[in-house]
Image (cartoon, rainbow, N blue to C red; front, side, top):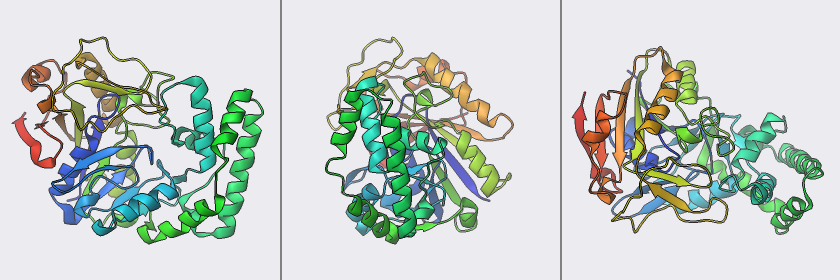
Amino acid sequence: MTKCSIVIDLGFGDAGKGLTTDYLASQNSKESLVVRFSGGHQIGHTVSTETLTHTFSNFGSGTLLGVPTYYSEHTTLFPPAILDEGEFLQKYHPKLYFHPLAMITTFYDIAFNRAVEKQQNNGSCGLGFGTTIARNKEEVYLYANDLQFHWVLKQRLISIKNYYETKLKTEPKSVQEYYKNELKDYNEAYFIESCFFIQKFYNLNALSDLATSFKNFIFEGSQGVLLDTQHGFYPHTTWSYTTSKNAIQLIKTHLGEETEIAIFYVTRCYQTRHGNGPMANTEPVSLQNNEDEANVTNEFQGVFRTQALDTQLLNYALSVDAIHHQNLKLKKNLMVTCIDQLPSFSTKNLLQNLDVKFNMVYESYGPKRECITQTSSK
């Protein structure tokens, strides 16, 4: 029977989706496929082994185990970054599959994102994800399928350039100047070359094309439920469904109703937020063993913040995710990460305050998959 695992972050992101995906991939790496069903090239999912710590953005978090990655039509791709990361990971033989309608981000999308973010300060990471989604909603497209056709690609880029030049006319002068400054060193020839050079890493497929090639599908989520476009808190939301909504749809459409599904809900043992926006008003936390924290202050997202967990926010996230699989029989598991950083934390106390009874509960006491233990079953 085909098995599907869906990895969902219950917070504002950065809970350990990369670690969880790597752990699940290690259970059956030869028959597994990681599926990206939300977000895109803007993610940063960190995986650590004895020899390497790597933050994935363009390849799934099972790549170090030789597990290929599928990017669905709900995701974005940025060819220059795929090329750079693919070359870096070359010895792991990274392999990608793209849905033909996966959306391509350009330097124009990134420049406009950054120019507007400087004015709005909503907490964007400045990599053009949201502007790519917005452009597609306005029917100005560039798809994975277009990348192999040189003339088509050039015409699409002209359309996108014209689209943003029109949008800029209604923006303040400061946004117009920032946009132009971002593009002053833009090399379109390099962007086009990267679109062709990455062909060695990917094939174009619908997910149904791969249904019989793999037995274990790991749906690696992006960001967190509290940033979801439907259920987050505007304007500090992402342009993506970060619940299990897209994953459930893909499974039903391409893998069949009889597929065995398990959701792995992930939370750190403390609350985090990278970027502007509200956090629950809980007490501060004093962390240890967090010298290698992958989330650092950057120009667009700002400061990485931490506080104690708010169980009501976790219950809210669990409740809104449940909306998207109300009529399905599936297993619900909980993954609690970074427990080594907060010795006073009690998973037992957390479970007593959550509204969901989980089939399995896992705890992670470090950054590697070997640090994960199964602690209980209900």
